[in-house]
Image (cartoon, rainbow, N blue to C red; front, side, top):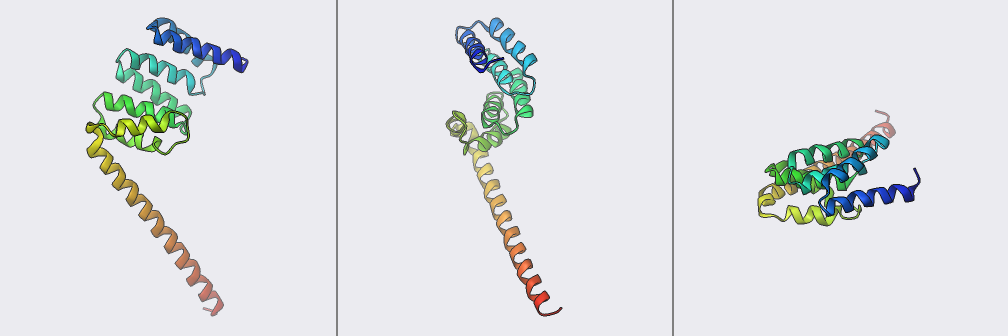
Length: 161
């Protein structure tokens, strides 16, 4: 399918969503999922249809599928995090949202940051920040140990030991 046609179909699906024509939007995104099963966009569309209907578990399943087929998609992780927050799974939602905060993907970073600022996510945001700091410190320790080991190895080899 040509890119222009694909963009038009995606736009029609989102327009149907906006006008609360959920059956038509779902139908279109399901057909796109059949045509493009290894792409995230049809599952994102299906997730948004469920999110618009306040069906957070079904939306999380759709966004989860988008993350499975496109693990690097910050937008899919952000939407999944939003659904988890809406469904009351604040810790899991905050962890996913934190992975999207530094993204360059359009729309992902501001949305993730906004949801992380919700009062419900505050205790988990602090835990995520602490875990990220610990991971960064551990990575720095590994680098220091590798540098020290390589220096020790060079000195040992030069000294004939």
